[in-house]
Length: 290
Image 1 (cartoon, rainbow, N blue to C red):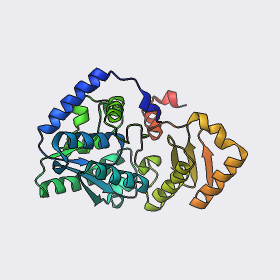
Image 2: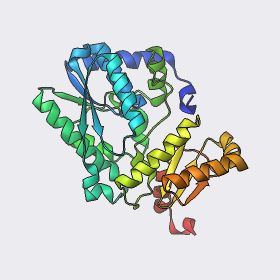
Image 3: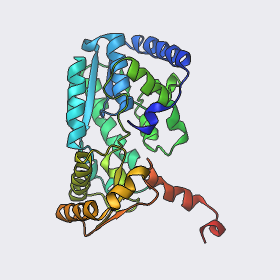
C-alpha cells in the first residue's frame, strides 16, 4: 500500500466535498476527462460516470512513450469496467524541441500537446466541458502543466471542490475503486533530470528497468535516468535487501542488459518529485549552495 493511502481524513468533510463534486459534474451535462489511469483522473472519471451516466462521459488517454504500457493497460481496464467511452489518442510531444530538451517547464509543453487533442475531440463531438485530475494539493507543488490547463480552459473539479489527495484516496476506497491505494505514478519523463534530453530510446530503457523492479514486488520506487547511470530510489526499508550481494548482482546484471552501464541505490530512498529538488537548490541564495 502506498504510504499516501493511510493519511487521515475528516470523513464528513470528504463526503461533503464529494457531494459538491457530484453537483458540479451534473451541472456540466456531458464531459470528457483527460485520463491517465492514475488515482486522481480515475476518481474524476468514476465520479463523472456516477453523476452523469456512462453515455455522457468520455475518457481520453494520450498515448506516448512516457506512458508505460502497464499503465495504459490498467487505464483501459478501468474505463471498460465503468462502461464509458474510452478514446486513445497518439500524442507527439517528443517531436517538440521545447519538450525533448527537458526544461523545468517541460510539463507545460506535454500538457499543451495533450490538451490540443482533447480540445479538438471535444469540439468535434459537441462536448463543452473538459476535465483533468488536479487536486487541491497540487496548488503547493511545481505544476507548469496547470498553466496549459488554464489556457485550454480545462476544468479541475477536484481542485474546485477543494478535494485533497488523501480525500480522493479515501473516497476512492469507499467507491471500491481499484486505484484507491495505487502508488503515485508520474510519467516516465519525470525520471530525467531537467536539461537531460528525453528520447524514445531512453524512455523505453526507464520503462524496462521499472517493469523489472515492479516484477520483484516493489511499488513505491523510481528509476532516475542519468545517461548511462540508473539511480534507483527504493522504500527506505527495502534498501538493505537490494544491497545484499546476491540481489545486488542480479540487479546490476539486469540493468546492464537493459542498457545502463551503472546502477546505484539512492541512500535517501524513494521520494515522489525528487527531480524537483534541484529547483529548490537553484532558488537558494548563493551562500547556501557553497
